[in-house]
Structures are given as structure tokens and as C-alpha cells.
Image (cartoon, rainbow, N blue to C red; front, side, top):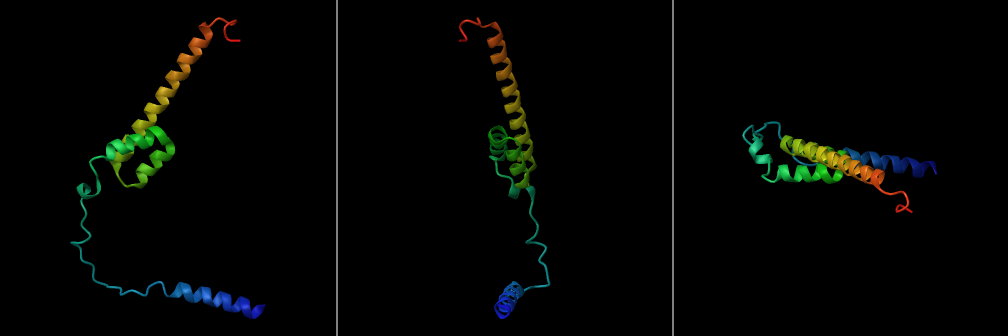
Length: 107
């Protein structure tokens, strides 16, 4: 049992040692690393962010910010705030409707 455990641990350590089996270059080409904001942002990012915030709430905001797009994140916050505002309005309207309803018709 000890031999099996030793062989198992050694095989795991050998598997983690060969993760850099590709050529590593020390020189960095700075031209290839230059990315502008226009390359990353898609034109539909505001609409997608709004939908994420509206339908998914705080999780949608988190997803939008993890996409590294500020416009999408802001639109997700606006979508979430609009969904919260609509929920408050709907609850208020239904509460007012229940207050004005005849108690006999509710049963």
C-alpha cells in the first residue's frame, strides 16, 4: 500500500512538472500586445449588458463586468435598476388593487 501511494504521489508530481513543454521566448513583441478599446468592444455590448442586468440581476452585472467592458457593465446596472423599479411599481399597483377590492370578492 505504501508503494502504491508513493508511486501515485510521484506520478502526480511528474505530471505537474511538464506544464511548460512549449518554447518560451524572453523577447516580447510590444506591437502584438497593443490592443485598443475599439478592438474589444462590440457594438451590441450595451444591449447585451442591459439584457443581462434586466433578466439575471446582480449575477448579470457580475458577468458583464467580468467581460472587461465598461459600457456593458453600466448597461447591466441600468437594466437591473429598471427591473427593480418595475418590480416595485407592480407590487405597489397590486397592493393598491387589493386594498380597493371588496373583501367578499376575494374569497
